[in-house]
Image 1 (cartoon, rainbow, N blue to C red):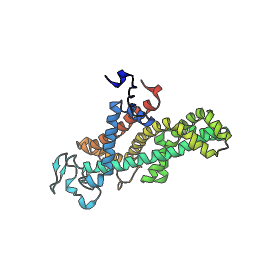
Image 2 (image 1 turned 135 degrees about the vertical axis):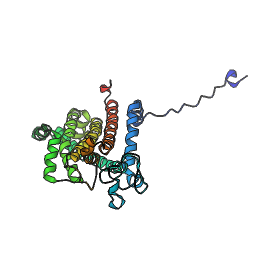
Image 3 (image 1 turned 30 degrees about the horizontal axis):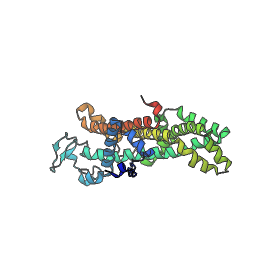
Image 4 (image 1 turned 90 degrees about the horizontal axis):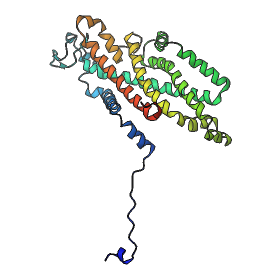
Length: 309
């Protein structure tokens, strides 16, 4: 007979060790529920990797004059050049390989888009927190400035700024920051006004904590969910605005190409049948913006479940 049958105590089973579901693990699990969002994330990751590795994986440096041959200008996709080089996406009017041009153009577009969105986020979030926490005249002054900024079309404001500053990557970033900061300020202020009345803020004030510590260590973390969503969307919007400005001739210079500038280079040849000069950069721009928006849509649904369909 067993020991349990004789009257001995049975050995208790070892406790089951389940994985603790942390907030980050739960966030990743909910985000991965959308196959469309995961597809967008994978596509954008590939695009970002191509942009980073462009100097090493591009077939040629399209802006190194020693590697160009004017006789290879406007060649159709798949054509073999005079030096035995195959142009898989064709060439532009200067004989530059379009595939290489797109890889290098992605670097500028992503840098300008992400850089301007990050700086605008820092500026707008800080002003939005200050408006919500200080209130009174400070809040009124900042929000009137936000209303004034949002009352004008973004592209018009950016054009005016660049007409004054001139071409250049840094000038484009400055123009986009001035255009975008108001969106972050309004979003953060709306969220911070709700959190401003919470008990933990009142407790921090009773402890006489410094104002900057209350704003950035206690108030800001609770404003991050909507801030992350709008920041993701604004990256795509900044890339589109930069492409528009470069297409109009007021963006980056020709020595630092972006996708918008590549599209502009082939616009005059569209009617003559040389579609590939503008078509392939346009497809690259479209895929980049759509992939970012797919990720942003899922982030919005995960961080704010009330918006789920």
